[in-house]
Image: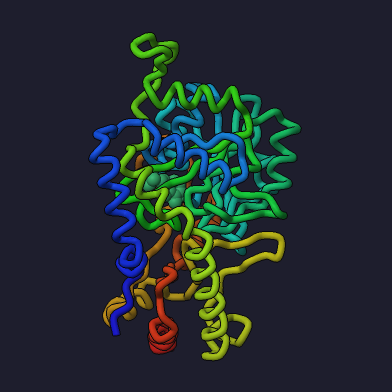
Length: 374
Ligand SMILES: *Cc1c(COP(=O)(O)O)cnc(C)c1O
């Protein structure tokens, strides 16, 4: 039985009529840019993430970019990011002419190592971007403590972490700004690209709204050089149908994660049961939303090929840490600089975890892994 990494058709099926009705509503109105759908979605997202301001934007990448622009990050500034994340986290820093100061990850959670941040500080440091990778929040309290002491902004890359919590606080509600993505594979996916930024700071929210529309206020009078970072009304309408189901879909992912944990233990494959596979951790002070269920497995590439031969979809998030990316060669890092990230890049493997995955499919994945690791 083939098991795809992600299959969104089952999620779509029961919502099809409501989604097509919502799309038709926008088509009938012929209002495609801004308007009531975007404004309503922003209110609903603010309520969901428990922050006063949520600003819809064109992608998760643009959420990071516009948040940094609004915070005035510019050439000569340094921004601390983990070296192990999706490219956009550091790419946006470089696009603004600033320099990413890379730090290693905690090998257990895959998130930025808070103890490494202190050593990366310089008089030019302006911000820290912790990433809540795979849907598990970074260890925010020590990060916020360093940031407060040094007067730095904290931009949460919460692209994979909508609804995730840390010590009772929501992802995207802890820092200066939170950046989210509606890329279709995220827990709340649009029918195309989209994203949003959250903040408690009314002035910052205003600045972001300004910048997402070429810095114009009023129309054609430009206070800033911004860009077109707007969220489409069509995407907003689709997302408004989906948002009420997000908590349930996340619960389904969490139950699937528990089932994998159990199956891997029963099969003697997990580290705790004497096997070779490290399962994802979920510390008691956080809720993991399992955008990805990522294991570590020795001889990963060979294991992945064997799974693929059986029709089991997997992915590597991410095979190359930032410090070894060709386009960042001028930053001057070398292999060996960040051993935890390098080891993760060589060992991680994301398994199918979407909500509609069945118990039989999960059993199929585990039994294929048993054969592949023998
Ligand atoms: C998906 C993602 C982004 C970028 O989001 P897009 O909507 O694809 O631009 C940024 N950071 C992380 C960690 C992501 O997973």
